[in-house]
Length: 273
Image (cartoon, rainbow, N blue to C red; front, side, top):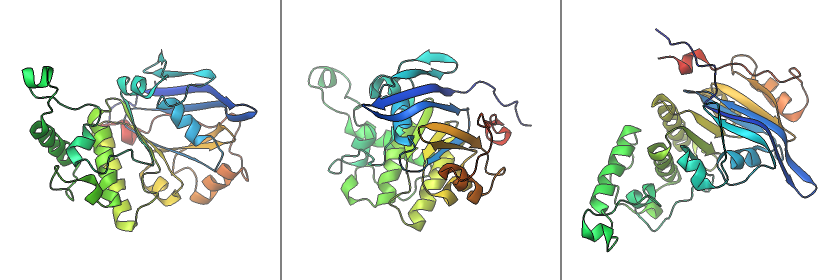
């Protein structure tokens, strides 16, 4: 039996403003992410998607506005502050170290040291344990194309590298995972694998924000679609409310839905048990 969907967003941004000189990247942007959902953020070039996500990931500090987690105001003024709040981001560049192995990349910046004096004094790393933990994280997400956590990342395909970055985010993101254009440079088969990976992250209980230009992918996996235009949210819809053509028309300004924007509550299917 489905549980009653929560009414308080897990992550909420209200009235975010970010200016770069005379250019306004965000002009009062809002965002609501509920537990157990995939929220797609779409918008044309210059819509403010990147600035919005940078504010949520701690890479940029907004000039005005508020960010809340579980209804409590938070200050995400650095990426470590966002990570400490449980928000992990998979950037389009992936930020992997190609010459390091898979386990080292998953634990990059969070390395496990060997027990005792070797770890405390000599800062020696426990490579065996990191590889065991990396294997466990990959298995929990159903990543079967990577068999050896000791394999160098530079030997992996684009989809496999994306899987490593997602596994790292899912391993340490306790509240939210943000993914920026996760299938942008991938072929059909690898895109399919990454979409399945995103669904598995959501099914493990982590809500996901996905920034994407790929409308078929958005309509396939998103529970709700946040439409960004000219630095603000103009609507938030569900895929069963509007067609792909209508959503693109709203995104480009050719069609208006309503004013103020429609913001449906959390989807019962995603929030339910």
